[in-house]
Length: 411
Image (cartoon, rainbow, N blue to C red; front, side, top):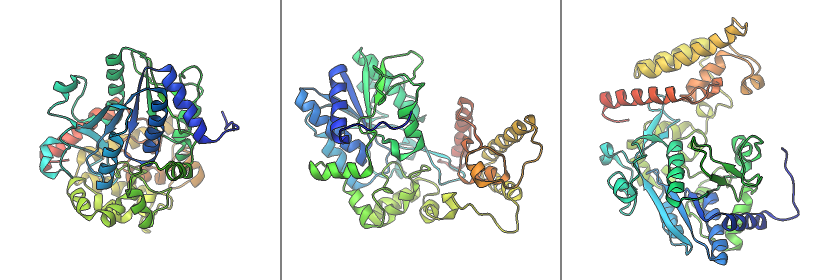
């Protein structure tokens, strides 16, 4: 499905979508991150809900390492007139860490590492001490994946409300191909055939829908609305802009993921005190801040030592990982074996050192450069080699992290 342009602006379209949701759904909550997109979405929802005499809830998952300005903005949003329940979650959730070969994930709010927490836990948060007493979240498992938590929360929310549920998500289709495909997919379930809605896939087939009221907005639209309607915004964006980032580069999600790590260097300049604690908390943070904008972590102009072939470099990377974490080395080696075996079954018995870079990017041909790229990206699940995230990988990761913790005392 291609783009279909309408004779209206995105602001009016978003308000119409929100009006539609509040008309058709009794139970509505919004996923909020503290960033510009979800902030504008929630404030738009508050305007519409106020006009319609409706209320809604907000889910905010606090990932421990954020700016003071972000925390201030969260408190501002929390005071919006139409918000009923604000679920401020500070639970030990497993998060991606793309800046370390040896600590591929880290766990926020891990009580075993309380002495290293980047900041104190908010007193009114949902945390490991009160989540059972407060909400009876018997489905929560410490160190569960972020994505799993989001799904389980949606299921719990639906069961609590005993009706169909709409969850507002502040994604914009032009931010990434995956987000664009989320919107235009023909195979997904939709609410009354609205393309900006998605039926959440859970085994029980519960009536839970994500909806994307600002999916067709540009970054400039976000800031235009903030200025024109005097919306509240996270002041850290202004600090990032003054520090050299464009409005398109600024990211507030936990900055250790593949797309967000360019924001790491901002911690040092904007909030040195927080940065010092991040260094102690998340392995590879300093490395990521130094090289996230350069060739080593950008992967656009991937280089290797001149005296090595890509195959030799791959072996070198595996051996280097193995000196610190043998289990992780074995995991990557197994991915490589499966990758090579798959191509052998297709009649390709020789993996070339390099192939056409465009074909490599499209994952159409095998090469040792492509294999090395998987390791350099800390791509634990092997998505660079066309693998998918599996339950077996997650279980193996649990073992690797536990072994790491037993040996080093943290992860």
